[in-house]
Image 1 (cartoon, rainbow, N blue to C red):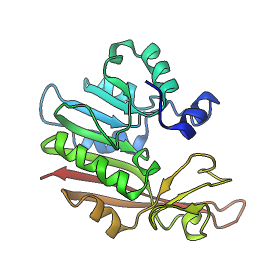
Image 2 (cartoon, rainbow, N blue to C red; image 1 turned 90 degrees about the vertical axis):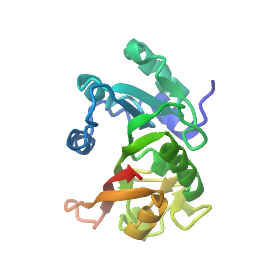
Image 3 (cartoon, rainbow, N blue to C red; image 1 turned 90 degrees about the horizontal axis):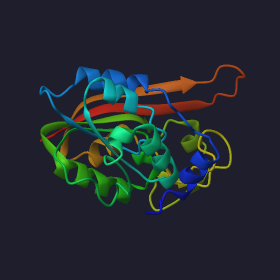
Length: 222
């Protein structure tokens, strides 16, 4: 199957954005909300280069992932043959594995879509989560980020989504979706939002007032 995520597939082929260490915020959220059962199913949306796979493997999770880049999935199949059948190439805004998941996690992958696509994906997630299952979102981009406040990129499809960034962290990565608190809660209207944290990273030197603001949150299927 050919990958649909052309920008990210190209980034991986160029050996850029190759994060391979588990994201500490994701580890903290997951460890604080582990399903209370011996065997539990976890789905990661957009696993990228597999940064979080060693973590989920270490806690004995039944790990699944759906990723848009065919080239990086092939690498992951070679690196983690035990998960070969569980890590698939696909578009998580259109479909996710027909399995009951106890936990779904996303570290800024779903934010590479517009509002309509994100909402469709969350509908699929809500359907496949067990009652009381959790959704962990890490580093969803905030409207307080400089790239959004300064109007960088090109607005497409809705007021929250930009593309065609030519420099900075979002250069050549396709669509980027930004949220404020109200918009994020609205996106998760079929869930109960349990926790939300707003983070801000400001560059002091060299001093150009650049800021990256993001959301971490925990939502529950109701």
